[in-house]
Every structure is written in structure tokens, then in C-alpha cells.
Length: 109
Length: 145
Image 1 (cartoon, rainbow over the protein chains, first blue to last red):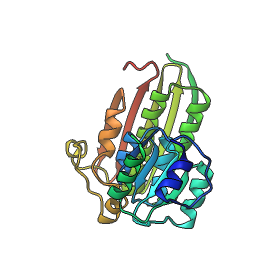
Image 2 (tube, rainbow over the protein chains, first blue to last red; image 1 turned 180 degrees about the vertical axis):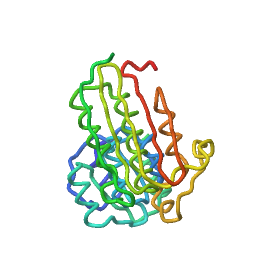
Image 3 (cartoon, rainbow over the protein chains, first blue to last red; image 1 turned 30 degrees about the horizontal axis):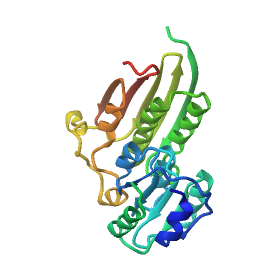
């Protein structure tokens, strides 16, 4: 599924610029050590963590887009790092489970 | 003797969360440019990242040395820091001495050293309390230890 479809149909707010890449899957975690071993090539990472090391970890496992649940927003320097790494950042007002349900309803598996 | 193709060394500073992950990111780019097998890159990156985070979280300063030969990849992390009093405990999944602050950031779930060991073909850790810790890891390029 394309990022644009997910953005439009789940009501995401973009925090960085983004390319309309294909999302291959979803990974949900707030543990950095878990992300670094489990999120490889997942496409979309759904998390509550907003710090720099999260972006470093996401970049290392080739995550294309990060969605922060519950309206979480990273600091400006974190957004800048993500822009440099080519990782698209988005925010959703809903909690992790509600957002996961939206993705599932959309047909993401 | 295997031929050494490339080596790099990075200094990591304790508590420097700002730059945490930079060394592993650079190692990943180098391996990608050389078209190393993606599975080998993934394992190397997990090792380098966990090692870097261990230095940032617990030590004063450390050096990550990365060596690529035509047979394998070696990653050695030597730090100056508190050391690990009980290595068996530290290698146990889920055991951690992380602070609440580190846990809130999604660290300190006791996955660091176990992740490094699991992704290595050869692994060793030596530590002296009050002096520091040396973690050595080797990843074979052909997937066999």
C-alpha cells in the first residue's frame, strides 16, 4: 500500500516531507532493542518513542515511515535527523491500538 | 590469514545520546557500498548499535573497532567504565541495571548483550569492575561460523 493512501485514509499529519513509497508492512514497538531486531524492512513503524536514537534505529533497519501515536511529536532536531535519513514522520491523535485497527481495516497486513 | 579489506574505529562518549547510532549508521553505509549480503549487514548493524548504546548508557568512553576481511567482520567494543560484576547475569535476557530515564526511552530491557551474542558467530566479553568492558564479536561473511 502506498504512503499516500495510508495518510489520506487514516488522517495522518505529516511532520516531514515524504515520498510516496510502497509500505511493505507494519511493526509496532516502543522498545529500541526490539525495533533494531524486529522491524527490518517493515515499511511503517508505529511507536510512542520520539527521541533521536529511535530515528537512528529506524534508519538502521530501513523503516520508511514512522507514525507517532497519541499526538506525540518529536523535537525539531529529531525531525531534522529524520529528514536527512529520508524517513517520513507522521502523527496521529489516536492511541496505538486504535491506529493499528485503522491500518488493519485498510487492508494492511 | 584472511586479507583485511577495511577497518574503522569510532570513539563513543558516555551519556552522548545525541550522537548515539552514528557509528553503526556509518558501518551500515560502508557495508552497503561494498554490496555485502543484507543478512550479514543486518546482524552487524544490530551488534554495532547495541554496543554503541551500551557505551552511551553505562560507560565513560569507548572505542568501537570494525574490521572487514575477505572472510569475516570483526566488531570490538572496548570501554572505560564501571565494568560488569556478574557477566552471567548481564548475558541473561531481561536483566538490566538501566535507570528509569533509560527505560522510558525504550532501553534497558536487558536485550543488549543477548542481542549481540545472538547475532555473532563468535562472541566474547571480558570485564573488570571499576575499569571497563571489552566485547568482541565476529560475523562470518558466508553465513557459517
